[in-house]
Amino acid sequence: MTSPPPDPAARSLDARLDAIARQPFRAKFRLRGRELAVAAEKGPAAVRWHAYDLVAARLAPARPRNDGRQTPYRGHPVFVAQHATATCCRSCLQRWHGIPGGGS
Image (cartoon, rainbow, N blue to C red; front, side):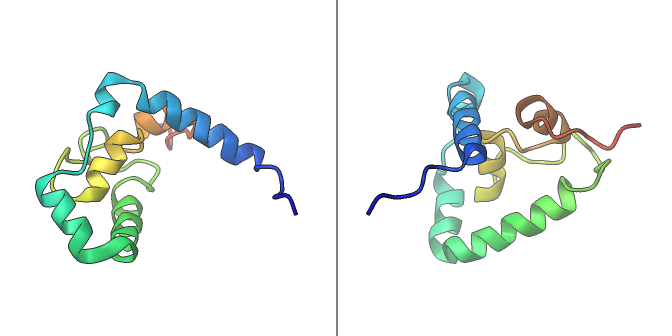
């Protein structure tokens, strides 16, 4: 039995994430120290919920407070992942993923 062909949207996202990973600024982000310890201690399910909460509060609003400065570089595995995947602020979401901000 063969598996179904990959979803075109998933292929597009994979290609975009591959391009983002080749950018020197994005490529340097790795879980280390505290972020690695938090991820290991809490586990993937808890980190996933943290990601949901952080994105909902800091990125999902059309005009987030402190846009472009609301995501620290370190301190939590989700912050590191956001910078690595260009999902750290509205400008990166628009530039890399084509998701527009809320306007003026």
